[in-house]
Length: 348
Image 1 (cartoon, rainbow, N blue to C red):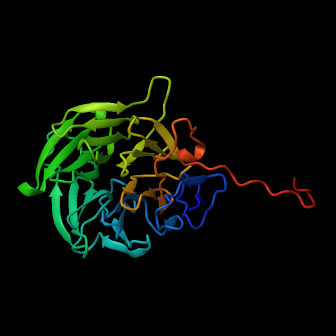
Image 2 (cartoon, one colour):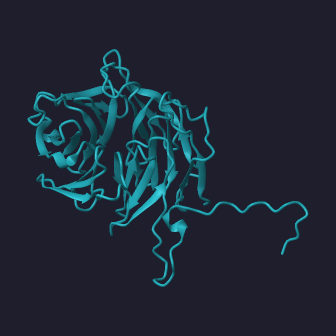
């Protein structure tokens, strides 16, 4: 299957540029498509409103996108969640919508557990039925935060460890909470540490079970054990600034880590041996990315472009001999097509 070349709108500071309205020829996103996938081309989703998080059902049959729809800290009750089918087509643009019996201000990170969709919404963890969209849980973390010290709780992402616990990042208080659904959603403080530097996206390592957090303020990647011990995996050096504002993090089926830098417009892949490769750049504000491991797809919401995209990922080159050199194609890039020859040119 051939690689995809997609053009996206350049973000504007003063106004939001819609994906279908503005194409900027210099900004090109290139992803390598896995040969096994059935997705023939990149699927684009439009008509969104400040999309923050893009999540796939592990079954590969449904996808969800959270839409802040306004200021990220406003209690305006106009946030909504978009539902897509297995092909990436919109089934219901406002599957869950703030208003009436539903409260949803500025939905950000999400996690799907046993047909329940958990959503981080300002200082509250909300949950909705995956099939009907009806609210099933409202859990305020504001009065339970011992680390807030008077500061408002600002929840950004939710991750599930695949067994029992939910983990939630609080960017304002440099904290990560643990929620136990089996104990009537008891909340405990897993870690409070200034080294978290505005924790944004969360993911659970598929092999170690450790929590991976990315820092919005200082561009760090951190690892937290289930007991709360924190280690800095990657941080910017004094003379180098690889990352700026990291928003999302997730893993593929082979254990590669993907992080999105919303300000620099890049998506990075870190291999298990901690080698970094840029797989996409010049993107309009990539936010909380997700990985569909079953279909080997990357799910990218473009917060300031009111759009999102599903695209294929590159599979590791396991059949290459040791002496064979890697090419740019191994890192998600392909050379541009050859220039057409002028009319009347003689072929050699």
